Image (cartoon, rainbow, N blue to C red):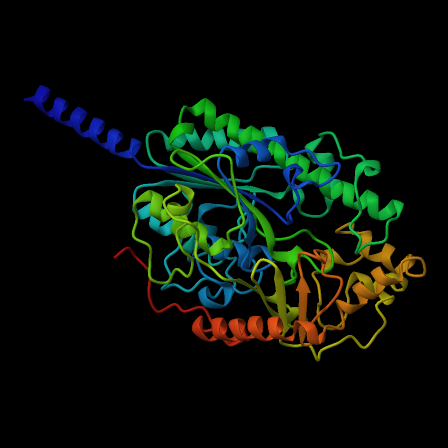
Length: 503
């Protein structure tokens, strides 16, 4: 009798193991504040052999875009397949650190922000957990509310490759035979660059080898600051190698899809926390079993497409709330593309302060970008030079935030490029005027990304481009109406009337 029960149990375990083995695993490699900068994209002085190799072994999207350009809204979009104004996670939020007790990730948490994903919207982590997946996250959380993202494994890894590799190793051991999803957050590329460079303790990019973007003055200081940013990208590449090595060592590489992207653009003016191209244009690749190799695509794709793609591969029904589309058929070569004519990105506020609210909407067809500044009439009542001449003001600026504080001069964030533009304005007047224009934005902006990739010439008032402006403006208005975007999400309070479950 006992032998029969033992054999039955063994058979059950084998069946479960076989069933789990047939399911696809996922690793999401997510860098923090990295724009479209890789060795493979031709950035001088930068070497990213591991990311480049990953992209070559799969499908790389050269025209992928974040839904927003602030950390928490981007991450909320990735894990709901929805835009920030739609899922309720429209600005950065205060949340627990990954090293905090389990209680802080429940409804009893002491870190609960009034802004966050609505209760009746099911998240990717909830769906995967309910479907038997083992889920994990490393380095940072930056999501709200915490209980809507019930990761089973949490590791506050550092910027060192060995630390992230060890976290991945522990996760894979604990996953055992279960299918898994691991979100590897890579903060090397977030300011302050120098501190993260010292922590990683890896070779740096030589400032003499970099090519300073033409929208900045080409000086020793800007070259050094830019080289430090590129160094952190290079270090993120080393972190990714450490994680991929552990995946290979686990023996589960063949059954795992690896997704690489960045949450948003890097931390400079007209980039992070804006809807300019530098803020929302990100690298994106998918690599794994069944996915085509050696493909570089110009299809227009969005971060909202990542969740439905994962669910499609996992065999889980895609919720009706999801605003993205599955890319699986395209990744496998069964469809010609994602079928999009344009991609929309948004910005509402970077932080919780009232002064940080500056809503913009942006749409691109891959060639042109149209931007609608919904609060364009709000301008500073002080010269921007005050950020340099008044240290007390720079430490705590007054008035609306036309960019995140880490993009302005400060000891904390070590941003030297902003001040250098002001110091060098006599020798580089065009670059100074571009910085100033960031504070005095018109209602509409239009850029030709092919001829003007750094968005230095606003074509919105140029009659030769009136038809293109009208077209994109109309498409944006239609999108806002269809997606329920009023342009002002401040009135949205997180819905708490229901708890989402699988149908």
